[in-house]
Length: 156
Image (tube, helix red, strand yellow):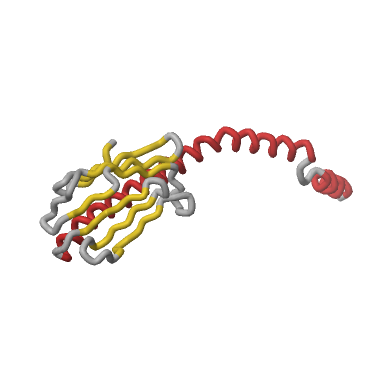
C-alpha cells in the first residue's frame, strides 16, 4: 500500500509544465505567427479587392437596370480622390446610391479609379461612354469594365 502512495505522490509532483517548457512553446508560436502574418495580410487585401469589384459590377448593372425601369437617364459620377461614386437621377438630381470604398469603409481600398469619371445611362440601355474601374488595395488590383451596351465584367 505504501508503494502505491509513493507512486501517486511521484506522479502528482510531475503534473504541469515547467517555465522553460512554456517559454519554448511561446517562442515556437511567435515564430509561426511571424511567418503566417504576411500570407494572412495578402489574403485580406485580395479578398477586399475582390469583394469591392463584385459590388462595383452589381452597382453598374443596377445603373443600367434603373435607367430602363425609370425610363429616365441615370448618371454615375465618381470621385477618384475620395474613392466614392454616386448614382443619381439625371433629370431631378435625386441621389439613388452613394458608395464609399475609402479608408472609413470595410474595404479600405488604396485606390478606386473610374475612367471616365462621369457617364450617363439612357433608358434604351446605352451609356454615354464605356467605363473602366480599377480597384486597388496595396499591390493587388482588379479591373471592372462596362461597355456602352451595358455588358459589365471583371477582367482577370
